Amino acid sequence: MEIDHLFDELEHEFADKSFQWNKQVNCLKLHLLNKNSFDLLAPIVGVDFVAGLDKQNADWYCISLVAIANIQPVSNSDDELPLLRKQNINFLDFIKSLDRPVRVVATFADQSESSFNLLDVQEQFVIAESAKLIPLQAIQQIRVLGTNSWV
Image 1 (cartoon, rainbow, N blue to C red):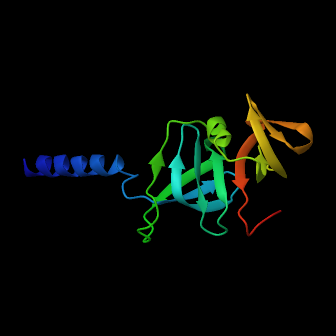
Image 2: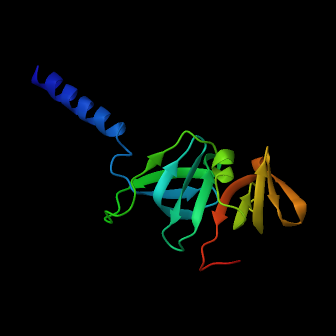
Image 3: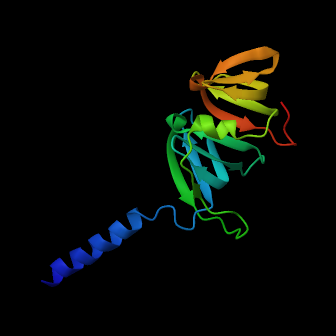
């Protein structure tokens, strides 16, 4: 009987831990399918994307879940960082919420990149300078360039 009780306790403890991966998390370590990795501070988890401030270069990233191989939740020791936030918003609507115009680098499904000034988002298109329309479905990652990294 004692063994049954021990198994019940272990099962209960494991079940509790498996559902609390996001407790006290203020950083997400992302490993992308293209072998790149990022530590995103003050992360946001949306319906179909993850966003946050890159720890290395202070650029804001918004990455579609289809480009991510795995995510490791991390508790950074900086108490000033906001904890992980879940938002019921999709990739398109999140990009629409960016202040515009803004300089971005988009990474596409074929891993090519393009830098441009994002002027607007309408329906399924990102509108860049010279009235260039970029299908949002082609974009897997948007990097909003910080003041230290204008490409």
